[in-house]
Image 1 (spheres, rainbow, N blue to C red):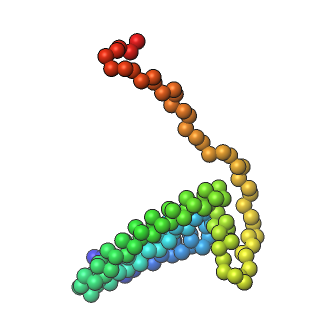
Image 2: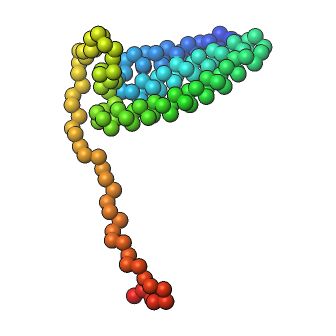
Image 3: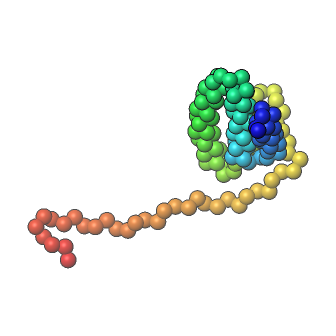
Length: 140
């Protein structure tokens, strides 16, 4: 039989993997996914304790938590697109100019190599627009 401790172990494993991933990665998308993994570990805890106590308070809280996670995903996507358009990188060190006044910048011990600056791909033109044909005449 599955007990409360089984749920808590899975939730702790999810939270731990997410925390390690968040602290060790520099790519913003990977950091965001690790934060979502930690959030899901918390959601499993809420559901497990709600089941253990025999009420629905945990499930209701998880519904709000999922709604907040969806809003967070939309805002994170907008931030990622904005950073990529400005810096052509998703490295978290590119946000250094947003720190508070008086806080020294974080210096990387192993900076990343510079990525080659390639122009973004563009769509090829579809061709010339067709000449308008007057009514009653056939196009040849």
